[in-house]
Image (cartoon, rainbow, N blue to C red; front, top):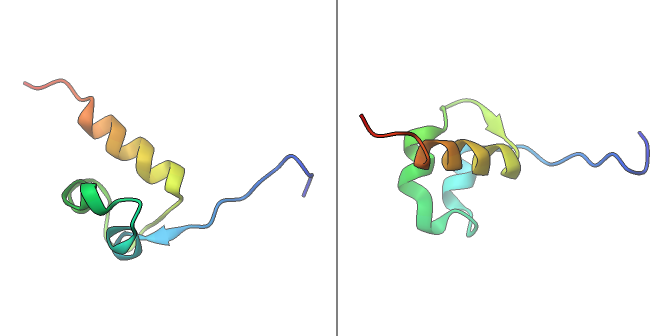
Length: 57
């Protein structure tokens, strides 16, 4: 691995729900992330952000 490559840890939906980072957005984590999958912090934030920015029908 090169020095400029950084790998982020992956976390389960359950771990992200319990984290302080997502404490104010737990309901969104429950709604957006899939059970049984693991996400990096960046992936989870992007999915939640995408959900919040979806156009309302």
